[in-house]
Image (tube, rainbow, N blue to C red; front, side):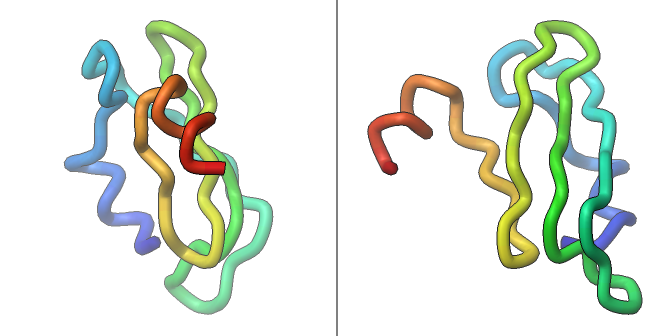
Length: 63
């Protein structure tokens, strides 16, 4: 995921602003980390450069 995507990403549940925490980055690509909603507090993982922005109930079903 590229950090400039933060300008257009929002929480899928309540459209709140997301806060990025980078765990691993390779050049401009965020490979691992989390996106946390500032409104509801939901945490969305970034795995293999892909943010999983499915709502919590759908994310649990896909595991």
